[in-house]
View 1: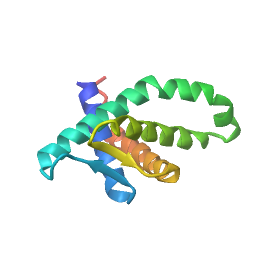
View 2: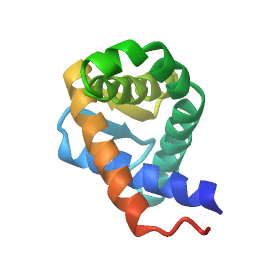
View 3: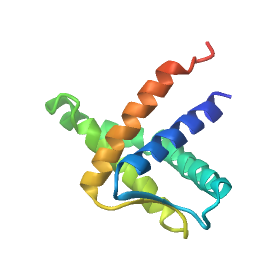
View 4: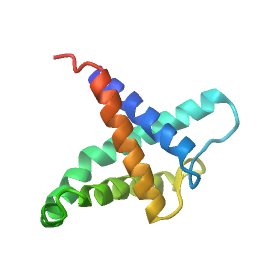
Length: 126
């Protein structure tokens, strides 16, 4: 159940980033809301997998930079995870599209803040 809640939170965060940032788009096969939701959940699943598998390795390797920048380099790590998700979903005709590194940084900040806020509002189940 926690995985499903985390997936929905990631989907909402990515959707808000796509709504608020001009150069972040979610490409769907048609204009129906059902197709948009399915594509958004698929992108969120890829984003969740990237965060679970790749992000810990990148954070470990970039630990000296994180320490030197007092944690600000984590914004770059979040941007890279969003950008990697966009590149993985670009292999299909639909998915997440992010144009440029600074767009990914802004989108990563938005996704992080929305994840944090929604994570606080949703109980852990402990």
